[in-house]
Image (cartoon, rainbow, N blue to C red; front, side, top):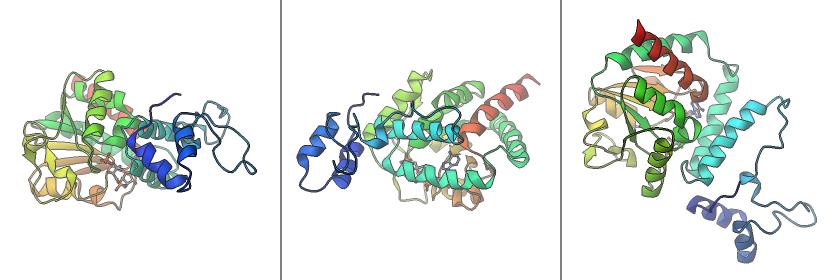
Length: 268
Ligand code: PTJ
């Protein structure tokens, strides 16, 4: 995979390479040079290890699936869709996924059915998309938006106009016709970057679908008398606790099931 360095990558290399190694940093950004100390690691990586391809992981590896999901987030960071913080957030999710046996539980399936019902009867439902969600399941987010139908809106915690545009472009590459961006709308009761929203999207929505976040926004949306559906593996997160419905499952497993359930309920 050849990837143009993003600001996040440049910042990461600033942290990871010794202060006096500007040359090494340049070489790594250009895909040349050694990663690590020559005596302890003679392997030449075309890219820093966190951007190297996982193609060498055999399918028989017991953690294959989990490693491939990680790869999506890593690629998302390299493409400027997910933030570096997204890597940490993903690790947090993985830990909780272990605890549920890395399977969609019966309770999660129930929540998916309830969520589909609520999404289908909601007034002006909106699907809010952040960096991790876009990196992990852009196709399913677009499928869900078409199946309901509901508009897609980019809303991110770590401010970056460029990332907002890249998330929107990613969703469009996966078939979205329209993606709303933060504009003149405001979410009351919060001070973070997530307060900026579209006046035609989240600001007017009766229901906001917020996969994958732990923070102040869900409570604020509830205070604004909106319904909230979240997907969060951590049942103790503020989002999971305050959402109208939380689906405690990995977004990667839950999204295809939710799309299927919405289509099924629409038929009946
Ligand atoms: O793109 P941005 O700037 O909006 O940033 C997105 C992240 C996710 C980095 C940001 O919202 C953040 O920092 O989130 P938190 O506070 O780490 O919360 C993420 C929540 O999602 C945690 O409660 C995790 O347990 C959970 N989580 C992480 N990965 C998954 C997950 N839940 C479901 N599926 C996952 N794959």
